[in-house]
Length: 216
Image (cartoon, rainbow, N blue to C red):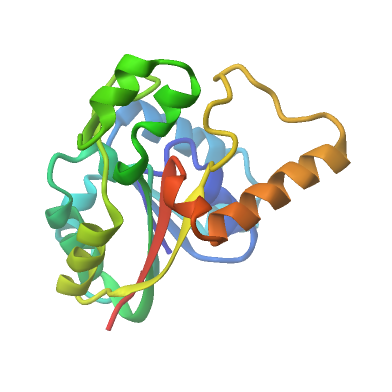
C-alpha cells in the first residue's frame, strides 16, 4: 500500500499493524519527522512493514516503478493541489491492475452546507457555484465535484467503483469537540454517519467524499 500525504501516520500505521506493507510518501519535512517518530515507537514487526519517504505524490515516477502497489491512498491531499489530474495520473501509474485508488476529497457540491449550518449566511451564499474555500486552518483550498472527478478517473484508467459521504451530521462540530464518552452514544453516532454516508440523498451533502476507483 502507498499512502500519499500520511501526516503523522494515523491511517497508515493502522494498516501496517493489520499486516499490510505500507509506504508513506510525505512532502512536508515536519510531518515526515512526526511520521518517522511515530513509526519508531511501534513494535519491531510493524516497523518492518513500514517505509517513510519524503516526496510529492505528483512525482511517483521518481520513487517507484509502474504497477507496484495494490492500494494507493490519497486522503485529504487533493484539496491542496491546484490541478488534481497530474496527481491522479501519477497515482494510477503505480497501481497494479485491479488495484484500488482511494481518495478523500472536499465535496464541491456541498460547500454551502458548513457555513449555512453555522449561521454564516454570507459564507453560504458565496459558496454556491464556487470551487474554492478557506479551511479551518485558514488556508485557501479547492474542492472536487463527483461528476468531473468520475470523468477524470475514467481517463486515467481507474474508473469509479464506489463512493461514500464522510461527515454528514458532524461536520459543523467545533474543532475542540470531543467524542461522546458513553460507548453506546459513540457507537450510535458512528452508525448514523456510516448509514448516511452510504445513502442518497444524504451522502451528496457530506463535507467530504470518499471516492474509490479500480485500475483497469
